[in-house]
Length: 76
Length: 349
Image (cartoon, rainbow over all chains, first blue to last red; front, side, top):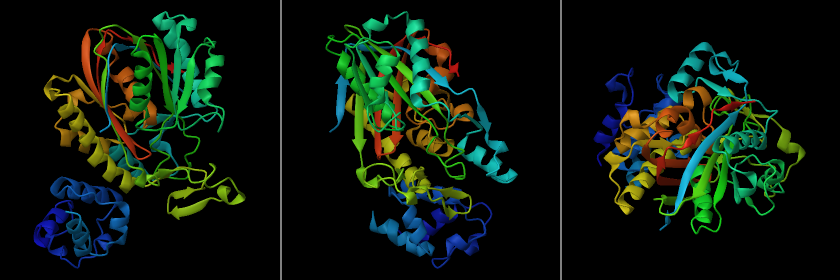
């Protein structure tokens, strides 16, 4: 799994945030569009694309997209 | 591997009882207007039957009386009474024992409670069908239901989701009946994902148990009330529900296209739709009762069959795969066939 692909899959869950906003160091929970439903959408993306179970604490403990990528990668 | 096949038992009928009182989610003071619309769109829950003056035992009692009458069964012929609930009348004795007497059933009756929630109907069905399969016992009532007593009215993550219902699934021994095929699974490492922390023997009731704490804006509860970790439950559900259904299909070489209905625990529409799509199930084969009843825990599968499929299942033969998943964490699935079963009108009390 490449970070670039993960970022694309992550960004695809958002409707209103510009693609340029997504970088490895983006603090995703500070994005205006971030919501509890988007959290579920990201969990579903990890399940469907990578067959990895992301839990609530993983989201809560991740600051950046790369933090979450590292969690998903470590479980593959 | 937790597979089980039970033969010579059939479902004879379904009944249910709910409180007459209905709470509309778009009128809750917990939500502003936008939040209510968003919640309803996401969960599919518009309204719920809720009234704390009724316990699960009260609802199941009414549903049992109706079921026995509609089936024209004699009470002395009922050999087993199984109650699946997380809301017993007392810590002890088992509520099923109280109901045996209240219903006027014979003392020659196998009665017990099973402490499970959203997966519970599947597990209860395995116990009840297993008891009947040898033919020594001929008739059983499987009761399943929960109330919202332990849900904080100030918790918008759980209160607007759950509804109250008590259901009855009537089972009988029938030589040659195809019976039931099951798969079960458990992951107790997730026990804190859905929990009432205090009031049992691990964390006994104390003054601190009553303290209402603000967890985050819109979520206030005490330690005697339900904690629902939505993200963990979602991650669990979208992974394990499709997994158990696929295991069942593979183990018993079932043809998915030949299954008439897939009735799954009614968690919330967002999660259930993910599960349905992952399994490639046609929406027409996957009914919901969420809109008018909410998430009714162990009652949700029989309540959905009763309210959404009544016209179909009272006529002809139909095949089902049902799947329960939730608190425990516990999950399981079952295949069965119905043939002109009796479906009582839902009782409102």
